[in-house]
Image 1 (cartoon, rainbow, N blue to C red):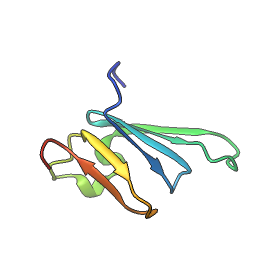
Image 2: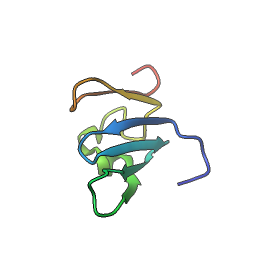
Image 3: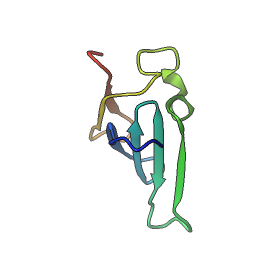
Image 4: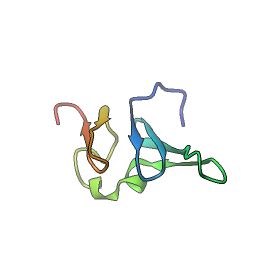
Length: 80
């Protein structure tokens, strides 16, 4: 990942860690205390979220936050 500030981050309930975003790149950290090893995943934004390919979000997000629901997040890019 380039030496840019993190644009957005939110907790991941599925991997027991968090997602962090810089432009169109992401890093997902599996920090589950029960995991045998800590894993780090990274790649293009749409690798992690293929449902967003072809949308205003496919080139990255500006801001994100999770909710009290384990499967719901809010993401923003520009005025979207």
